[in-house]
Image 1 (cartoon, rainbow, N blue to C red):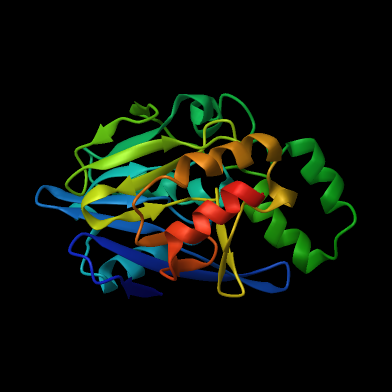
Image 2 (cartoon, rainbow, N blue to C red):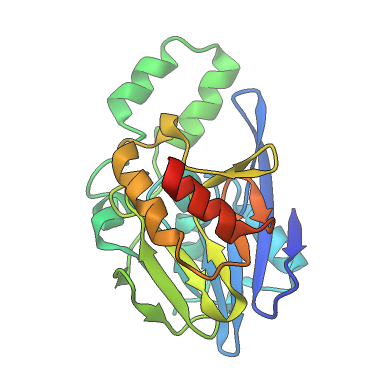
Length: 250
């Protein structure tokens, strides 16, 4: 659990880790501070809420400081903490997400990458210890409400002005966020960092790679100084040049 200081006034990157299927997975929710409270971007896996709360407290943020949650998309590792936040967070907490992912987040439709029938088939071939972990995360899927629908290119009154960039492909309603005053791009899973280098999305978990690559071109024209990926953390090694390269060569 860490608060990765970017040297900005408003943006902090949290680090949550867990052993998933025998391997360590680290993910990075983000907090954006304002005078009226704090915005949390993505909420971690099911079962990580106590770790999320501790990471927030380490960054100087209490649950009562939260004013809104922005979900970059519907995947279980991004919405896993939402039910706990809605239950234990402030009563006026608002949840923001894109309309295309809203029915999945609210449980109207099953999460695209966590189909119950597929999960049951997986469970039948797993050893008992691993089966218990999968059941805890993928059988009883998290869900919650969405209060505000995000739209492409709107500027939110968050962090001194945060632009919503609709970046579908990884999911139909995936969004990235550009905190303009900090020149910080929060990519969700539209990009990742692997071996210290900024990459496009993971093809294995991206149903529409053609659309995801088109989405990269929308990010290449931004005056970015820092990129934050949910998988990989912080990238500051000439991100504009790297984004341009990926958009041209994806």
